Amino acid sequence: MLRRTSAVVSLLCLLHTAAAAQEPPPDLNAVTLFENVRIFDGRSAALTPPRNVLVRGNTIAKITPDPVPVDRRATTRIIDGGGRTLMPGLIDAHWHAMLIRPNPAQAIAGDVGYNNLAAGAEASDTLMRGFTTVRDVGGPAFGLKQAIDEGVVEGPRIFPSGAMITVTSGHGDFRQLSDLPRQVGGPLARMEEVGGAMLADSPDEVRLRVREQLMQGASQIKLTAGGGVSSPFSPIDVSTFTEAELDAAVEAAENWGTYVAAHAFTTAAIRRSISAGVKCIEHGFLMDDDTARLIAEKGLWLSLQPLPDEMRLGFPEGSIQRIKADQVWDGIAKTYELAKKHGIKTAWGTDVLFSRALAQRQGAILASLTRWLTPAEALATATATNGELLAMSGERNPYPGKLGVIEEGALADILLVDGNPLENIDLIADPGNNFVVIMKDGRIYKNTL
Picture 1 (cartoon, rainbow, N blue to C red):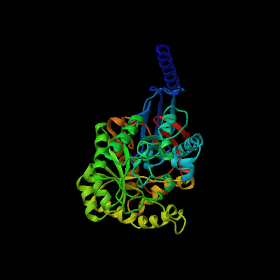
Picture 2: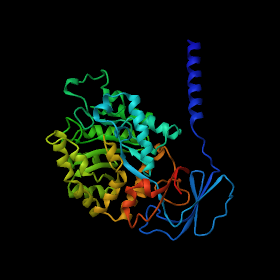
Picture 3: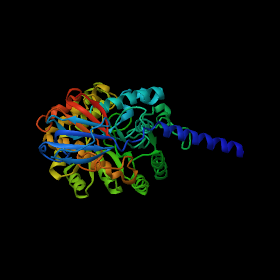
Picture 4: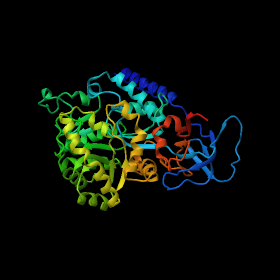
């Protein structure tokens, strides 16, 4: 028995050593100098006059109008910005990294290896669209995050929630009627086996599932507190978790120093989530004015998405999903107006599911915010504001440091844009032509200059 235990320990040590060997060590002495750039810092309504920005390692070390003396040997990369716009990498706060390319059946029942390879390819495309960070709010993204962090594949930073936690018949329950009844303590459903969604039908089950996600490295927890569009047996008007169940999730997350984000459309689902201590409401498209005021008064976050109409029209006419989508879409504009009226802390995301074509429009979806915001406000939402939301993960933050801003000491996630996106926000809709440099964590992934 002792010999077997020693062998297992030796194997684990070897696996740990191999994993560590894959991870590219950060070159803290690497230096990149951007000369003659005008800066959108993630907050301001105007670009700065020409500046020089020095990146050392993975951090912005200096921003100055003066020439920067550097060692101009081969180890120092100098980029002449030519008066172009330097801005923070973009952040998508509502993303499902594992659920973009497959259809629902493939995501649940398809080959796991294939799905992971497809997600890796999509992650690389996401980074090349200028999105250097995503908050993943549901899906088995832990392995993908590890592969990106270790340099196995290229992609954005991922703040993972792990499996979305739902109730029987709730949003995220993709079982069929033939899978019922559920036997408590029985075998897991396929969606649970692959880590897409976990069922929890009591406070104790909720605590268990939350702790499992935290154990795997979740930076925040995602629950579905109300009905959803894409799930087959989840009416929009239904409130799912009881307040005691929500309390259990919030307690478990706060014990780990992080927070719960709750999918909720209706006033009832939102108010129950607020009562339990949820810190971020995802969507909220069917809430009323009083509830919006309450969110603002309590200083909570509202994570909104300007969902394009193509997503709604992607559901077949007459299908239950299409009927539910028609209910929800009418509330999008109203909710943005309520958020602005009450000064709610508002994050931005896309919530693209099951459509590689729509994912390619990630920047265009951001640009569509100008229906309610100025270009500067829209870009601030996807940079500095989203960066503040990510910081709520506290000690569970997998990337300690400041994101979403161009300032000294911030992490070096940087885009160099050929043009001024504060004057023409549509530049971000065509990243292939307009993002001439893409840097994440001090490393250049694209440079066409």
